[in-house]
Length: 327
Image (tube, rainbow, N blue to C red):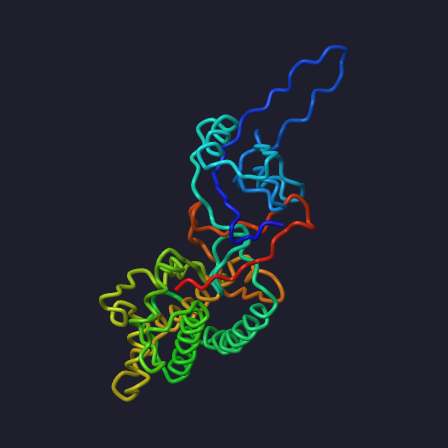
């Protein structure tokens, strides 16, 4: 088997073609179409993991089947990239091809598309983060029984809201730090992380693009907790986080900053940080289900950024996932 570290991979999206089966004499049924050619969806073209030198293609519409051969090379030496791209263009005319990630390669605790399957150790630690969030959400629901999450109540404040705001923001900080550490980030001075460090995750996770809403209170409107996060002003530009700092360190003066709007934004920020690690689908079903929020917009990852599923000619050939720290 070829190591997943050296396997080349390309990707492209295909709009699909209208399939018109040819007429067959004698009433015989037409041949089945080549799904990889006719049906819409993403394609991955990659070197044969067994080391034959051949090049194979797998379509998202046929993930449960073996890939098909695009180029056959008997000498065991893979063809050069120009030959591969020419073969793709010959079969899928007009395809816009990009160099993709190595199949099975992904960054720890960073979700990038449907093929971001975490390992057992990651799942167990992620379970702790979800449990902590659910403890917080239990108390948050009690607040919403007293204060309706309506635009008119955004500035309502109090001590319970302050306590929950502090808890939510410290869990957001914990998520930030965990992702940085597990991805090899080591620039924090004396292990003291600040928003100057945390803001490095803005583009890595496309945090500004995430948008959610309260599932039961949609009239409250869309919440984009990280929109406008400015690396030049990493604390001040995140209003709910700046107000958390103010009320945490000076309750008597800044208690009004512990308001409902900041609490909702901070918990939405925590939900986004969980979704950005494991994907929104994982948070919509057991055992990680958090149903208080729904994702209304998530990042769309490009061909060069989205993870490629571990792929091979058969299940026995599938290369395992390879963790690659981002930093």
